[in-house]
Length: 490
Image (cartoon, rainbow, N blue to C red):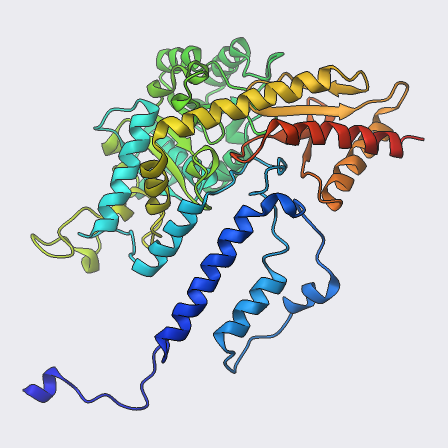
């Protein structure tokens, strides 16, 4: 019996644990020191830089079969990865709406990986923390404690989860059992013509198709036109369609425009529509003292998608989706599996979190949000949101002072759309000029912008979603855009 309890250890058995923990400890300390320096000195480095050919070739090497000492592996990372980031943690990265991470969140990701829990469910501390962070998100959005939610990878998945529930609730049949072919009238979903492309992908994945998403024109402030929306719903009903879901946008990806959530909540209620808010850009305005009014009505939504890796600055990736109706949420995803039966005690005695989404295997995303909120408090994150919006106003003012610079869309929150526009230039030439300004800013490591087209007008887009940005960075942007524009204009 004793031999059965303590089997002999074979010399042939292997592990990934080190044979000498002291060597790993020393390297780990070096990694932490280098990481702190990396963040401390971020302003000394270019926002982005092109990789030389010899660095690119490293990523074409074939699968390694023989071992490499860990210190050499880390040196390769130091030489070939760390100097060539996307740049989104740099204070002058404004290309896309991402978030800029924080050192506490990075430490949390390390600890989450060390602890190694799977968040599919079960009775353990990480699962309780996951639920706690969802509860905090509910509180931030003004949702009831009885509401439901889950952490996901980001906005695209959050919106997919929300629209899945909306489809199932409004289908009029048991769509999980019988499928979309059983739906008597084709479902219609409504959003503005500024809606994020993830909604198209979601409806395609849900078997409804792109034509199920009716895009409604927007007004001068790039918000959904409510009169056009009403007319479209009435027209669809008359044509034999089933209006099912209204997707409001709290912060469009192009310009940051926020639909009138209160008016849309009223409309959705009157028309019997599921009311979803894509708040991946702007939902967290709800915690910003000076700007919370902009998302008044968000707590009336049936579902809300938000991204803690944006204005809560968590390291990638973590999104969240919330539902007022907890039973509708769980009912869209829960299944009975013989290998995941609950028990009265022990590891399987708690809730199965996988029953609230598509993933059975779920990473420990909650810790990086939990630690940063504990360290700073939610009020500081609200002030940082207000700070970014004030910075966008400041940049807007700088642009308005320069006749050769032109605002292309109203600045709603923290996204500024402008272009360099000399007199007498044709549209195609102006577009080419502005793209070249954008590329030069990137290649010279000065700033990272993106470009977009809004109602047919091409422009440069500055999305200020960075806790490291200062007004002096925006001064640099305008100075350098003017310099490059003058240099490139014939």
